[in-house]
Length: 104
Length: 455
Image (cartoon, rainbow over all chains, first blue to last red):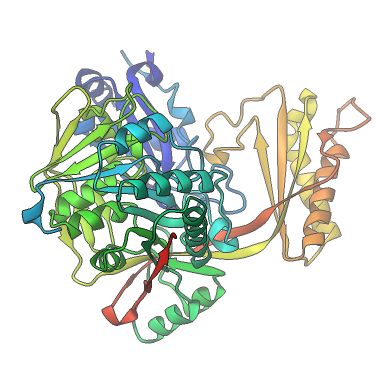
């Protein structure tokens, strides 16, 4: 097993509008990207498990070949900056992805 | 500027959020000395949350410094300057504040007379309620339902997100500087490109690619200058920090930055379609991009952003190190919450407990929220319409952690380390309007004004 951190150029999250937060996992090269996609470790199901969310909370999920990237977008529990929301830019929501285990 | 007169247009940008930090001076000077056709800057965003729109607050501490640099250096070279979403929220007060600052800077530096154009983006709840009554459905984005007249009236302040129209009007009038109210991030770049006769798909795509300046290049650097070059056939991105390169990887990665999908971007004019885009390295530092398409709306449609005030807000912090307290932190929160409910029945307060060390950032989405930390901090966030009541409730809610009755705890002198007094914070707001509205020419949503500045 290898952690996602060791396979990527960037793992990040950021608001996409006030009601959604989007996640970008960008790989070093095509071979690594292909390997992770084929591993099935990053899918709509695995994202639901990791974040304890329902499929309906995912507004978009795409394997984005041009950028060797996996990208998905979640609805936020609260619009950004509402009382009760601390991550106003959505920029730390990716934290649990960093150490996600990818089968070798 | 007809297309016959120029085969390319260079647009320079050095900041994706004017005023939050100073632009890198070296790359700024290197880029502006190439004599770009326009200098542009993004003055704001909905990203920092609704309170800035609601309260008319500017969040950056370097606004004056950046405006001074942009205005003095662009005027020296007769390069038009365009600033989008002035004052963070693009409210009328934000526009007025930027216009005032530019006039002050121009006077102070004795800049020769120039023409300054600006436009407003605010729209009233009455206007929206009348549109709804007239049958113009105002559709919610994401989880938002269609707007009701009550919701329109309840918003403290509302802006419409402008497309190219007010920019083109001011550019047609030949102004030297534009200060825009709330506008699309791509539009302050796309508008001058379209005005000069370049194709809309490439113009919008270039606007999207350079809106955050050096974030389009690698390695990661904020606030450094880049230049976007548009022709009839392609766009090229050139970074001016000597250690940065715009690569196929960095450009493609930026094309998906802070957007729901990497393929589509909605503007007031239509949808930018990037599915067929091609990225190619044309030199060590420069990336060439082709293939954008653009599908115009049948009816122009603007996004609306509205902030509604929820109350005055205070925060306080309670922190624990005793493992028994940490294990029982949910019971301690419940103890605090129930104490407030008993003491202030019927009061219109709102209480939030942010448990840092456990799930303060991700809340219910945190996979490790059941793992016990060795130390934990609970930030209590309280809202109430009355300032003194908000302070009082916060104080009691925090004190209840100190006084928490947790079975088995042997620390009998206090169950948490706490702040002595609650801290006043910005009032609480929510994005109550996140909608789109079909518009007509006669609405005149973005009224423009042209004045003279300088000496």
